[in-house]
Length: 331
Image 1 (cartoon, helix red, strand yellow):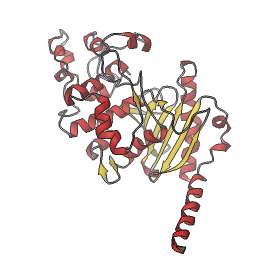
Image 2 (cartoon, rainbow, N blue to C red):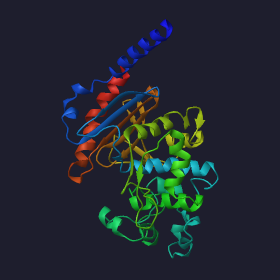
Image 3 (tube, rainbow, N blue to C red):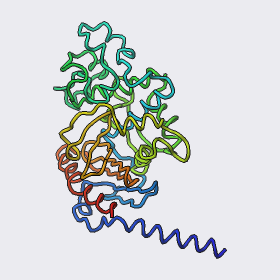
Image 4 (cartoon, one colour):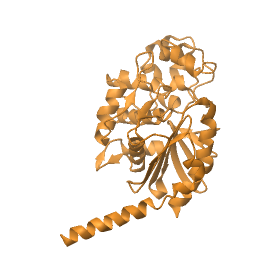
């Protein structure tokens, strides 16, 4: 009994010291920010800080915006591993036979990798979010529209094209994307509560315009899954080879947003931040999941998504909050 009591006391002390690593209350621009909703941090697979703001709590399903893309990327890797998809370099036309009849033969050469790299050449410019959401067949729209560049040549952030990934998962596995995610990703991780909506074409949103909605602590699990090479509780959930591809993509493109000098590949961002390698997912308005391999740490934030404040909020996180948190984690 004495031994058990001692272990409990030591555990309590360790937890106090772990939470003491992050002094968030001293960061006034976060504490008093009406737009930030959550901050959850783990180190060595243990949550060391969990805090919610502005009437949000641990049960809130947050609007994760384009973090949806990064989640979908994990599903693509699982589908490849299970043989539903040949490889990331399989042609999109294999899933959309109508592309083989298109007069623009370049469409026949577009690969899944190029879609995931935002370099497919598919059209998107001129179609705002509201218009795309109102189109009866958004996936059909994007494959029929004229190309804007050669495949693989130009980085053009393209929600309409990224949604095709969800369609490809559904067509190749004969399971809708939500069911596939639940069976092969969420259930094994113990993620039981989430929301995911369909686009007008009947396929679950693959890009983040309607967005997957998860608790911050559950999205954090996905970050730790990347950190741990796809393993959760000794079970290989996502193949290690695919995680390595996400962490070290063969092809990347410079992005004009996020952390300074960020690169984009396979629906994830990459940065060398003051000598520290960062892999991260980014969503409109301040949805961030930073994976820091050298520190075995993951930082997850959720914020408001209003267009009027989204860019400012994201800049606050990348320019002030993240550097401060990284410094504290390094100490």
